[in-house]
View 1 (cartoon, rainbow, N blue to C red):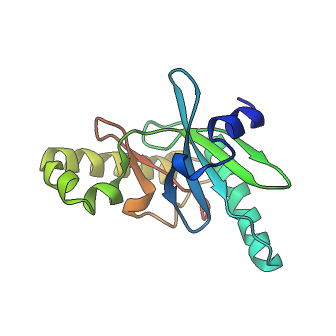
View 2 (cartoon, rainbow, N blue to C red):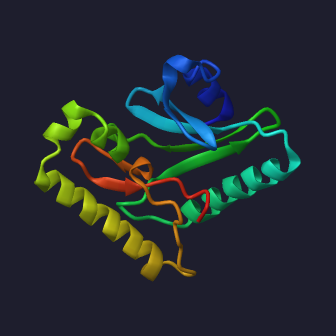
View 3 (cartoon, rainbow, N blue to C red):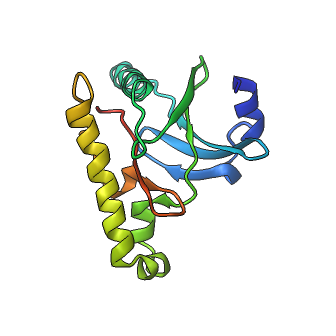
Length: 165
């Protein structure tokens, strides 16, 4: 996976590939090759020096945290790029989207039965337990919310967004 592949797959981060907007960056869906779909979080360009330092620390924190973590309920980081124009993180793409999206959409929420809800809660709990008890040093997420819980099509939860961890 190369920088040029990401730029080509997103057509230079065209809005038609935009799948999420966050405080630190936008997330794009990119198909790098048949069957290889990823989510690319492009960090917002920050010009203010104080905010730039925070953004840089957040970027590095996410990389350092996720590089050493391998757990079924933690989002998989495939790679990253730090470029003069922009920085981005490349993650496994999860087709189910965020828990927040499901809870705030009447159609999806009505299909989100108790069995699926319990499955999601167990996944989040397993992921957080791993971070707190099985990582050395322990990792504290600091920003758990429904926006930071991503789901696959089987409603298996994956904790994401480790910028403040």
